Image 1: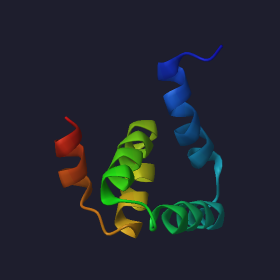
Image 2: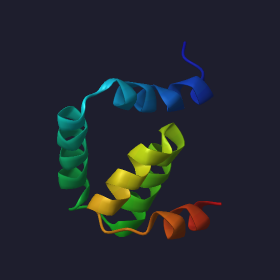
Image 3: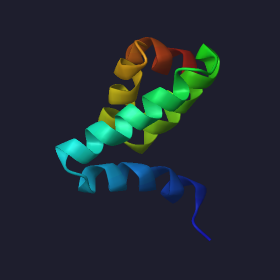
Length: 76
């Protein structure tokens, strides 16, 4: 079984293995899927992505027009 803490880093590890085109495609897919959900859910997802990797979470937040500093401050 993967520990909760280790499991959180797996998406970030995968993101770091991707090339720029793959990263752009992933972020585009995530943003497209999250655009139709309430802002609160978007923010919670961005927090998870940020915890996996700050750059990863920041890119998703930017795609959703969310301020990453505001989102992370709310989560604290």
